[in-house]
Length: 484
Ligand code: B12
Image (tube, rainbow, N blue to C red; front, side, top):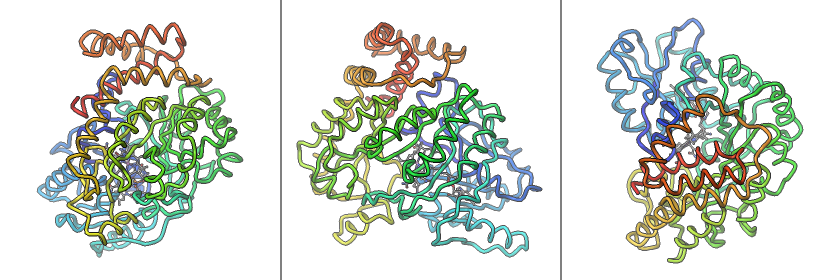
């Protein structure tokens, strides 16, 4: 079972209706677990983001395996309660339970951390009828053994994007990020053969469209990428249409032109990068070495010029942030042409260096909401909280209101080199354009900016029209989530 997401930045809930999809991403953790459970077990996957949990589902099952992130906490509680009422055993795993299992008394068994390591022990005991309450480990798994996700458990048509994972872990040590604590400092990778097999299974399952490489940092092992995985992906793409990739990577991607070109040739069109802040002192404070001492705008633009759209994460609330930080962030975002800019307050997840420091300083307060873009935080900032909140709201207003948002799309499209590989304009995409033109182009308050962008794009580079429409749809979603 996969609990539902609230209406967040990354849920893309308000964008999905334009393309007639129910959820943005499938629950990759559960699909992977599905393939690790005994073959002879009958399995059903109930993703509450695309379907309802029925009484018939509950009557059919005898054990519920539940996965969630912290942001799904509320729905996870409700789902667990329903399963228990129906007399099911509940087995829980994934990020939410790994970080706060003590809060879930009703769960029968916790299989925490990476299931490659903890699930076999649980299954052995479970089959013998003597399963313990908690299975955990301090080791990191060898993902060469991770099986192909069991795509048969979902109806792919309900999702906007499919996901696959090439690596876990990140070579950097940003002090607010828990990735190294959770997944290690040395990136662990799958082989190219594993990735090609996963892509083949998606292709044979009928998927055509976007595939998200859900890596913490896709370029953690550049050597293997350039000598093995990317050449294999370039080869795999030949003769196949309708597949595009996106991923997450660090800004030093901009330093390697060959790597960027190979990614584009392999079918990548978007990359999410943690920019965080244009302030050098704040970058030093959080140990974001890879972003320091460089012209960040120029790095972003050189990635865009290669044919990769850059999405960016930004943070305010560092100790070094002064009152000018809000306008500096706004100017940076507008000038960089980062259309999808995720701006959050600094938060300190347990397990991070930042958490330990603020604990010592007595500057932690309350639980994390699990959504790092909802304007909440568990830290007591140096800056006055009221000033920080006001500044934060100012950033959201200044980057997502229609006028600056559409201006930023143009800044981006001016720089962006349209990649050779693209998804053809089929009937579904045409319908999405039609719906957008009615909902945004006629009824939306941003209609003037919308039509202006359409005409501008048609005249400048008609090939980029589908991208312009997609970004217009995302803007609509961001304004709804930010209540602008
Ligand atoms: C892809 C991804 C996303 C995607 C898609 C998420 C989705 N719906 O699938 C997007 C971009 C939307 C996203 C958004 C966010 N994300 Co995110 N995301 C990831 C990422 C990079 C990969 C997740 C993944 O698919 N992994 C691959 C699968 C195979 O791994 P897995 O799910 O962890 O499953 C393994 C184990 O956990 C376990 N397992 C999982 N479930 C179960 C269940 C059972 C029963 C068992 C036995 C075992 C088990 O077995 C699996 C194999 O080992 C992870 C980091 C990471 N490396 O995992 C962060 C991560 C999950 N995200 C995180 C966060 C905080 C967020 C956001 C709140 C942050 C934000 N930037 O705004 C948002 C919230 C989402 C929302 N809609 O509001 C945190 C979660 C922390 C927590 N304790 O909850 C993580 C861990 C990153 C981090 N630095 O801490 N995210």
